Length: 371
Image (cartoon, rainbow, N blue to C red; front, side, top):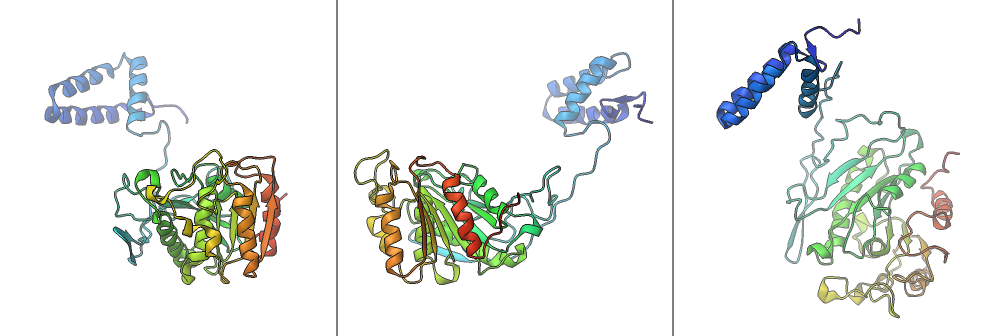
């Protein structure tokens, strides 16, 4: 009991190693004599009497072949997540396909729901356009679920910043924000949209939001969520996208609330110098008429705004201030906080997360965090 058989090497019996090497030698006959010679040499090294070197080589071979030493468990077979529905969207020269329900990179039912030693359900990855070449179209979203007993049924789509030049699920304005939302009982969906720097000019980013929102609304019930409780949260350029979506998305996918943190509202900001240039439409960025505060209407959803007066990229007086005023002019409820101790790109910070948490609880979307 617990003793390795005398003919075992590196957690595998010697006949298994010999079989593996015989196969390798056979392949060598096809692909070259050098491979066959190497396989034969390994077979000689694995003869009795060379146990030390044999054990080392067998462990390396096992690692390369993905074989665990000692007792191993059979791999869990993934289960496909099927749905044949598909929608098509076009804008100018770009041809967009809506999401297939078969699009998760890691099928949600094919992996353990809970990571070993952790309480958080595993994130689920979705390609926006599975049929597209991922070298050209990197758009995707990742869903982060709260523990079932904490779930409120609300979903918030998170749009990271990056000046529309970069966007990454795993940046400080992506995955950590979704993880914070799950602690409030909210399902977080982080959108990685296409970027101007990759040749995807505006409104490609808004197109990506619409594809994502349609999928989220369609799938919400199967995720244990409420399709009528889908909101949006954005930072910097992602704040422009989130605010624009809150004001301009088609009614069937329009967000029901918005959280904008140091957002770019005015496309010509910063107007008085700063760390970045304003957006120029002839370079692929949104035009001045697509500034968010210029598109507010009476159907815009309630807003939580977080601005930084000393922000060198998106100063509050050019962005959150005018947006707050425009929302109030249309009778839209606004909660507005400011902070001057942090700079642009600060991500999750107590100065805005704590009042935002209270605001989300008042909206009926969140629970208080566990102590």
